[in-house]
Length: 81
Image (spheres, one colour):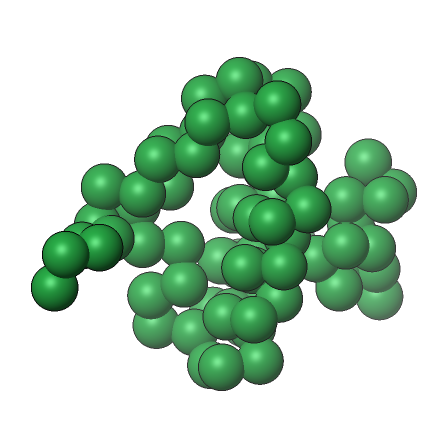
């Protein structure tokens, strides 16, 4: 758990309520929660929508780090546009 909090860059916010986090931080927290349970299939609908470029990059780095042994589905991502 500590490693996941560090990976999403929320170590200094670990005692804060989720509702008090910024939108980008809430999005990173949501993605982290999806990986915490150890599911083999993770469905994320537009995980970087509405976040600034810095937070977007952090979310994609997290997705790449935790993709091993999982199938990640992105229903809102149109790869053929």
